[in-house]
Amino acid sequence: MTSPILLTTTTTAAAAPLTTTLLKRAEAPIPAIPAAILTALGVTTVTLLGQTGGRPTWWLPIPVLLTVLAVPLALADLRHLRLPDVLTLSAYPLLGAAIGAAALGGGGPALAIRATAGALLFGGAHALVHRAKPGSIGAGDVKLSGSLGAVLGAVGWPALAVAAVLAALLSLATAIATGTHRVPHGPALLTATWLCAVFPGAP
Image: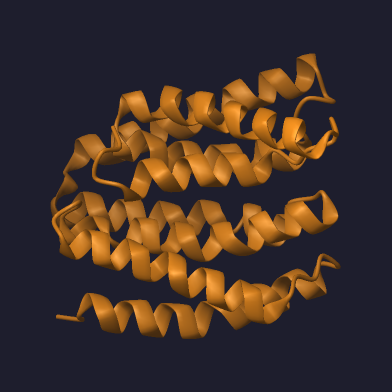
């Protein structure tokens, strides 16, 4: 069996340069070294919390993969005010595969059912908000929300509401702190979902 530490090392080493290269090709470059460091810190946090009993072993690949995607996406949105399709759309099959493996590995069919419903609910809700008030969230946020909803649904039904509220509060706090209304919502969505997926106290 692959050890969590080995998984952390190999995933970070392979993924950080790849996501950085993909974003550069999508004309949304991010600083490579900070991206690699933040990804490594995030994946290490996930692994250590997993080892202390926060989540069963079969759950670990989900927050690890979420971290690998979340860091470059958040940096791209902060820097360019956009969430490139190359990662938001890739998140669906990647996270879907991780969730499917988790369901087969011990989570059971209910986990996969919740994930599917979560993707539809979370993604649908953001699509409705974007359609009603396009200036509030962007199209990239809508594309991202479905895959994040799958993760939140897999965590548990309450996580969908918790993440939505937490993301709104984080975006509001950022707007107040920076004194601007043009705040990207992607980093808040990613952070809220990551917190729900990683920490033992999450729903």
